[in-house]
Length: 207
Image (cartoon, rainbow, N blue to C red; front, side):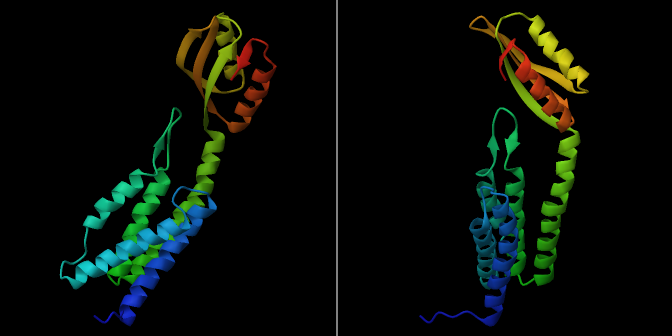
């Protein structure tokens, strides 16, 4: 059996690799779980599946989206503070869509989607950083030297004096010491100042 690719197929594959590579570079630069090679392979695989489906007369194979969902779920992690990896999972989903557009020969759609995705990832990241700076969340796990409840009240009053807001998540007694989890919200500069004050408090064993 003789194997060969037409110039049109080469173009579709090449376009998928380039577009996936552009998204992959951004993820690799930010040291994300799915980086340069992964995003390229996702875009390339989606393009190939689309090309094969069209050659078989099946049109665009939307089942690719279902398969990509499993990969995206693998980069999402949940801890005690929150959920991470959602943006990378979304990039994987977009890379698959771009690969499908390339495989279908819709180059303007693939290129425009790549540019828009990069704009969102780069420009909106700066905006997100600014918002996080003026409205930052930090979960404090405070361990006091004694079980005196007044120590926690003292810390909460200190939070208020630094123009911050706090929410008690959990308070318990452990080995004759009071332990409290509080979520503090406010400007990042004020949270840093709070950290410095907590370090100087003799009643705070650790945080």
